Image 1 (cartoon, rainbow, N blue to C red):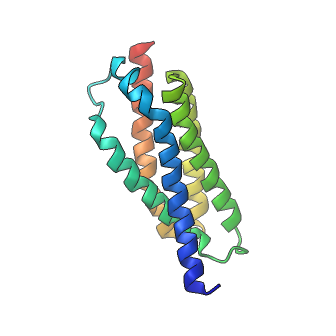
Image 2 (image 1 turned 120 degrees about the vertical axis):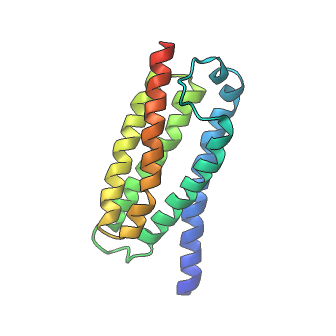
Length: 161
């Protein structure tokens, strides 16, 4: 397989994997957005519902490109496999939050998962920064959004306990 074909394949896998994780999370979310979530008491800073899809789509694309930049480095290079493993772990935790929070309607469970997610993102950024500074910088908006989501999750739990 040529280098160019291999690079396009890797990019497709990275972008598709991240967008797929987002799609799976949205399946878990859809029903509760129409039934359970509207009934919750929300903080004043709760964003309008329409903002989540474009923000998450942008973040998943940035995440996918970030992973691609790391994967593009020599796979035998020190830290690449570990960094991509942490990336995969945080992506699994990311998807699981949608299930815990929305599908199982657990505010406290969501809070626990999002704290684990935040930690996994930080570790991924640290691992990526040793391989590609650009890849690590691409994850900063994701960390900031998840930080905001954690505050929102906590506020929802606090207001609805």
